[in-house]
Image 1 (cartoon, rainbow, N blue to C red):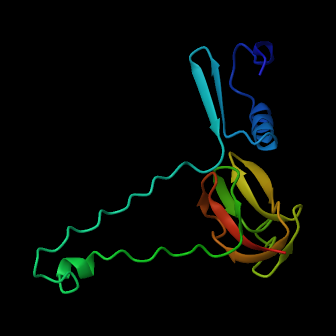
Image 2 (cartoon, rainbow, N blue to C red):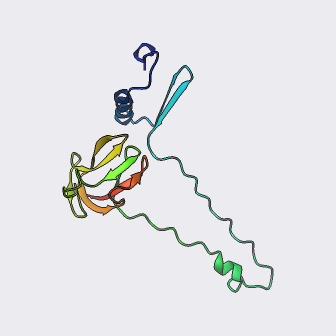
Image 3 (cartoon, rainbow, N blue to C red):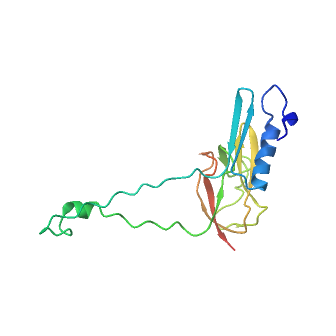
Length: 165
């Protein structure tokens, strides 16, 4: 962003932060860092990289002892990795509070089995008193709702699983 576009004093403008987030999504950027004097902001989108630790295999059993009868071998056998259910995840674009309805007296935006299009609003995530309508961004059928109404959600947290189609 050009230096003259950033005001010399005052807090970051929420509209400008939103515009930056939209630009990040539009250009598929993962991270933006801003600095003004001693103030530094870092905007990051997408899930954090996760390093999966795998336990080392047990040492070979001494000669004459069958590893099948070894109690250590029986208890340390790794469980097969579970396959994630099929479908596309709709993830939270921001940290906030998940709301499945537009207001407490209204029915939910979607329920399991609801057909959605990319423009269908599936929920609201409230952040700092701003209620952000979240579109599906995919066509298909809601297969699973992964959070409850009123739950706090994190950036990138899966909210819905959609079966494309």
